[in-house]
Image (tube, rainbow, N blue to C red; front, side):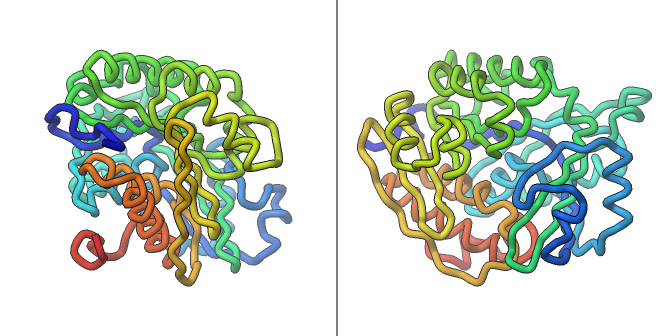
Length: 336
């Protein structure tokens, strides 16, 4: 068998853990990011004042529940997986909307929101996503309530009931969240479950390279990364070199390469998956959707090649429109 997704019966196929964020999508001119001091295609952490300034400058195309792991959970649920999610919001209107979005998507969301003064000082997070005419997205994230996520927010009964725990690297900035990652991994492995990690962003990797190496070596069963992220982790510009090094450090990695498809590495064996062509409107969530398709396949005993194909199909759907979540019922309307 190429995977062990059904090693034991579980309530959930997938549990996502990450930053619970409301996405604000806005089309902008090609030079808008540079004119406003941003690195095109990157994710930057901003404070509340900067978030409000940007919010007032843009034409908002769409506001919806977001966050990397949450997007993965929604796509996986859309594809028929049984999904849960843990993340921190405040007891405010955006936080309530975030929870309602997940519930509508069929995702179980048992996390307790911040109340009272703590919630007032840490409102629900927002990510202002600027989309240039070429479909590239530049993200500006105000983390708000997300920074309070801690080991106490890792609900052991939900972790133990999930085949795969999928954690996003974006959550890794606060020290308490790093400890929460390790807590979740320990609980999962003690219960015989698998742990997956997405590196999320090359600048995130640059901030936490040593900690990510520790996670990859000792706590993670499946590593997800795109070409930029895996090259950043190993401080090389050569993808093949980065792939060789990750193969030596972990036995299972899934590496995406945009229009060049993806490479699945398991126990030194490589499988190359082609991308699925589509008209690119907005690349927001492409990696999140790929991980969703892959894990939806992996937890239903598909071959690795089929898991990769499902990842590519899911990614192609979300980049064909604004927003990181499907506009169709992929389980019904696409070839699964």
